[in-house]
Picture (cartoon, rainbow, N blue to C red):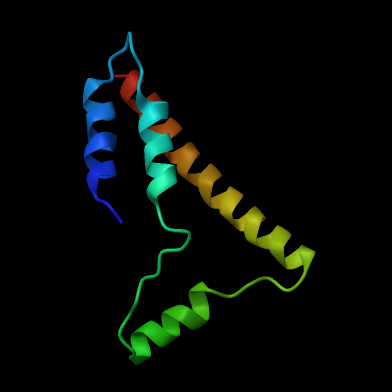
Length: 93
């Protein structure tokens, strides 16, 4: 596979301005040249096996999937609340 697409991608980004946006062309070049799958290989040890077992669990039911999304939403809301509180305390100064 030719590597010239990377230079074409960078050129589009470098020549992009607020008047002439070339980001969509850059992303199109990237999309055409990326492989269908990318794999990350890890060494085989207890640490990576534990990560694989805990991080890659797939919810078996819709209810458990809904719980995963609900937990993620709660974490996100907590982060938003912390940012808002920090912003309001700085604005009050």
